[in-house]
Length: 498
Image (cartoon, rainbow, N blue to C red; front, side, top):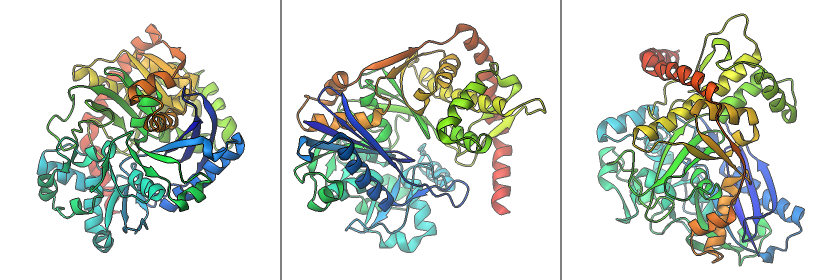
């Protein structure tokens, strides 16, 4: 028997086939596009996801020669804060505003000032308020407001539902079984609650139903295949990283970075609508801190500094060149807020900065400085846990960072922590496989399944001397935003008027 994990990331869908012990029988991926018509905008076409999924699953079956009847169950994880307006039959009224779309910065500021919350412009409430103001006809015509995860579960099963793992970020209380009506009244959208598909609510690992006949045909699977409720890609990645126990920190790296810890008591935003009991594991909160664009910034450097190199060669050449540059990149300092800041500032208006350029600097200097800037901001995330009383000394890391030994060493040196790298680098995909296996009864619960289905392949220790140097530079990095905040905002306003 096999369990199918499906991971919808920012750049494409990944599918993995796993046995009860987490051994991977096969893997496939299919890309799709992100569209950015203006600074801060980022959209994807939902039907691109659906078509990519059909291709990826059929490719997986072809590569492995697996009989579809052997696939007992599947689960899907998805990038979060990805908002859809739909009709009840699942047809989208517009393209999806994905997580990295921060056009709703003004709405986020307004919501926070009205309610005292600390909501990011990425999240559902701010994006819905932007849509209500700027696309009122589509807002009114929509019968369903949902996350991409909920839409995909509908396409697979024909059942509209709300996913606890997502919805606790925008007002759902899993203990009370309802959304915070007072919050939506305060921000001028009481009508939104009726359009959330909350008549049926599932937690991670719950059974939703079987594939519809149409979905089974599209994927090349049996209609008997069970669909389990997955969740946010980063949250599900905690399971695939072997970090589903209290106190372990999981760092999911990719287009964005997210640092997460399971806790019995919340560390941040103690009174907010996004408090989120039972977010991933029943009885736990998932406290997290995130940076908006990490891998995306590194990919930007590849596109603009190493465009003459084929993709397969580019990163190895980039790492080789950057490894020759000393700690601190000979005076360069990069603020990686290319798409704004998520934590701790919740500022969608700020943008990135490169300071210290001179005629002696090369593209290798610039690339290393960008890597260091991204790592400084990750260290900033870990600092926030320490400031909240949960110091971090060891992390489990998944995603794109794991493919670069140089980036891992810089991160360990900047943060001064031990880094454990899972054997399977596709931790969200494996995490969805863990969810599917648990829902099918292979393990008693998600935590037991995570322990038995994950392993580590590498441990990276920080260099004490490099860490000492980076601590001094990190202190200067932390001064940048407070020092230049007003300037950043005034320049953003000026650019918006031009």
